[in-house]
Length: 136
Image 1 (cartoon, one colour):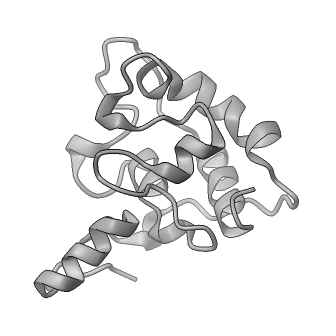
Image 2 (image 1 turned 90 degrees about the horizontal axis):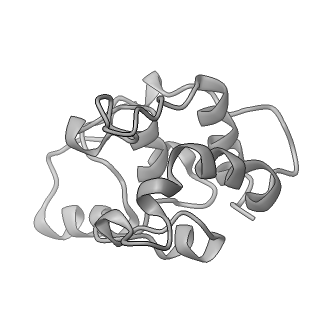
């Protein structure tokens, strides 16, 4: 399934508001994990702490996006909301950590100064399952 770019002005605005990346082939996403009852605190925060918090934590969060708390994840950042509970394949966070869509938005950036490695397929699958389960 490909999220198309041919949208009217209002359609494009609504996509930006819920953080859906446009023109992304979501069939290239790693599948959601089969694990159940995932929570931000126990399962997702450790992944984000390792790979994302250096840039998206309390100190000068890039793009005004804080991923160091569940409230911050739900609030989103400069580009709007980054997750859509129940819809991981439409969530900007998933698209960006899977290195799909606009290369300028990939997280962590492939050639980052801190040498933070990309998330693994398993980590992305856990994030997807957590979002699909309602992002609690």
